[in-house]
Image (cartoon, rainbow, N blue to C red; front, side, top):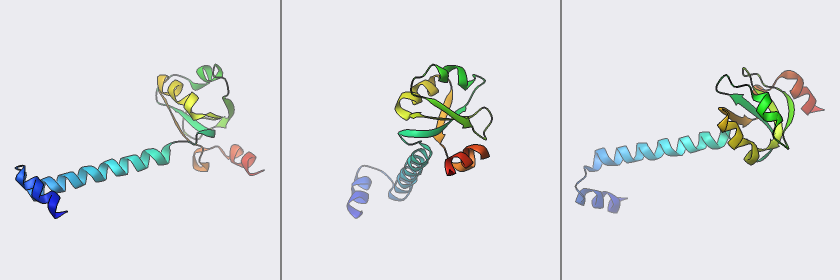
Length: 117
């Protein structure tokens, strides 16, 4: 670490300010990546599609092969589907929607009961 600080000083930087800024930036990047990974649905299986605009999900989802409607989500306009994330994600983004893992807190009660059986 001392070598990096020395090199930074030789380059004309202030060791305390620059190093703190660099550490803060690295922390923000790491935490951001962890949040993105935590909110990414599994590559295959149930996931929730949440619209970010007024475009309804069902019409464009019906055109997708391999996507099966499983139920409604708790978020407004959201639905639970089963399919492959890599096939559905680009289409969802193009239609102003995001995909989240099908966590019980985001699913309607009847879907959770079906999964428990």
